Image 1: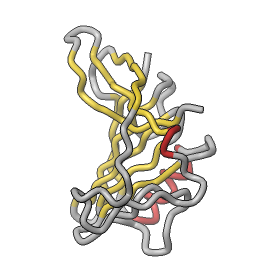
Image 2: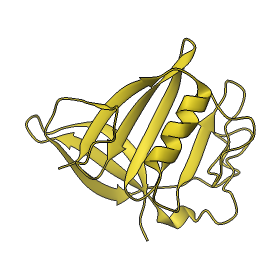
Image 3: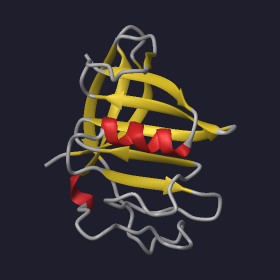
Length: 148
């Protein structure tokens, strides 16, 4: 069984603390979004963090965030049923399945400024994890994950 949960945090600093609480596993990669640009796949948080939206993922979980007012809403998608403190579980009997992901070339025309892969980020290890409710057979979330 897997865990899907959410919580609110009140500041960028609290969000940074939450990220560090969740990503005990290395390696972890970030993908951050601003209105005018994206970070690409990076291994470390940049100095201009926090971004209005973003995600961090590793082989165990993905944490997503989005600015709401002065704070952020956070969604945790985990391959383990162990809840992280402060997250409210979403109802559902969650199961996961991992699938190959297709990482577009950094010069793909649909990305006018390109997509950057930080040195050491191997796109061949990036997969997708589908979160499906067993009772309804509906896929509700697709997360990024790492497979070695």
